[in-house]
Length: 249
Image 1 (cartoon, rainbow, N blue to C red):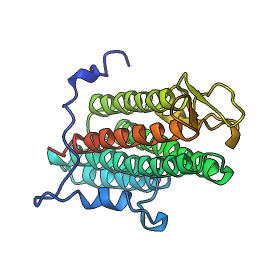
Image 2 (image 1 turned 180 degrees about the vertical axis):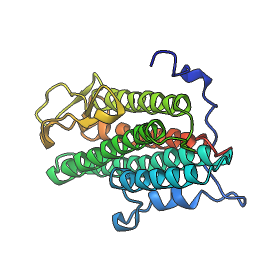
Image 3 (image 1 turned 135 degrees about the vertical axis):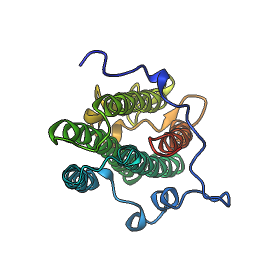
């Protein structure tokens, strides 16, 4: 409803990437950034369904017990948003790896397909986070006496996820579709992502030949290298969002 969502400026400023007391990176972040795909944390799309089911069960149980714990609502929203952002950071690392590999082998169809696959997994992670937060909002509205955060608080994070997803889409597209970039057939580069909201983010290239690896004055793999750098910068931004999630202060 109009007026439910405060401006993004009202959100807390991003904090550094989550770390342990000894200065080491948060173990969840390290898990999401593992090079072995089997050991990385799963994308939040399937995990979101489990998280939402647990949230609904917990809300019903807490309502029956008249649980009025002030910290629980923030923790539910915080766990959802933080886990989703960390998973997105992991997929950004994979995208960067794929782009670096393409920069080394710009004519390789396999490397181009790897990059498309990494981009599709990244988009799926963003959609998963959007659906998880939206699911919490539906749960908060539908469960009488729900201990979940108030609707306005969840609405604010729904809007923030959309804003962050749009910024990510535009930043990646700006590198992939750079004016000096070209695809494998020498055509002007197209956007890598499309989608008006986080829940609609998707890969928009038509196939591996449409991936823009080359950039004038930067060589056959120059655009792919720039895309890898942009993915790493976005990774840092999403880990900072994870640490700024409700209940993380």
